[in-house]
Image (tube, rainbow over all chains, first blue to last red; front, side):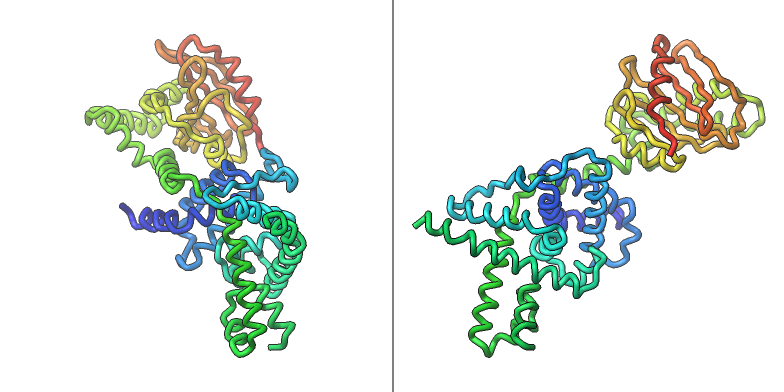
Length: 171
Length: 240
């Protein structure tokens, strides 16, 4: 096996799960998410030479994935994800209470405006640092940190409002 | 770090080590750090979705397919495997030398004849069944500044070829009448004789259309309604 193939396979093994989850929360559709990840890696393979340092692989792959996702809208092949009609992922093997709580959290995350949601997804799902997020979204780091702060702040507020009745119902 | 900055930084990143260290002496701040870290754990678990099984394998598989459809040396190996006999390679080499000779010598070979030669030269490619995505075709076609909206059948072969000294796109798709070969030859510098019309031999029939930006040459089994396909293909080919 060539060096290029080895390097590529390592990238696929390390990043495909995280990228799939990130893609899923961008498009809310498992099939489209898989397509996005496939397309991302295909493009990554074709321009693997341009990735100089494997430490930069994550932001590099995310940049490709976001571009692919943007193309999807340009082509208008798919419908926009609609917050009201979102398919919310069933997480099996959790109790009903947990499931409801997770659904409530998912719904609130979806309600965040995308400028807040995307940095949060990059941080929580992808484990990106502030610098990496700034790099991927082409923003300065202070802006990213402010958006992350607001995202958590809004979520916490929304969830404390929402939280009580659910807990109340289970009592 | 004042209280406001502490809060802002903690909310922006609950795992910021500077912020965590800062909170060590202050039980109230320590409590908030724990709360935010728990909150993040909740978010993470709410955002956890199962990754489809076999995704990594499918990604690697796709990369392999991409490689076989674009790299010509890998295609050669595929021929070996398909026929289990070296004569296919020998035959290709004889033909390659033959075609080289024909293109190198300045005999005025007609485009139709050349198209037929080319199809025979890569006749094995007609048997391929693995689909090449339209997008892959369009990525190649983009080099000529064109794109296909659709093709009347599953594309099974797409590669750049030398068509009488001109870089051209060689496509094969599966029509209702069997495999059909399409050559798209950009119009500049064509050294073959310009001619519209039909050509055929005992097995294949073909048709040439001179376009403004490129000539489109179709080759398929005799008896295929070539005009219908020609209209459809030229209609779907868009110049950007």
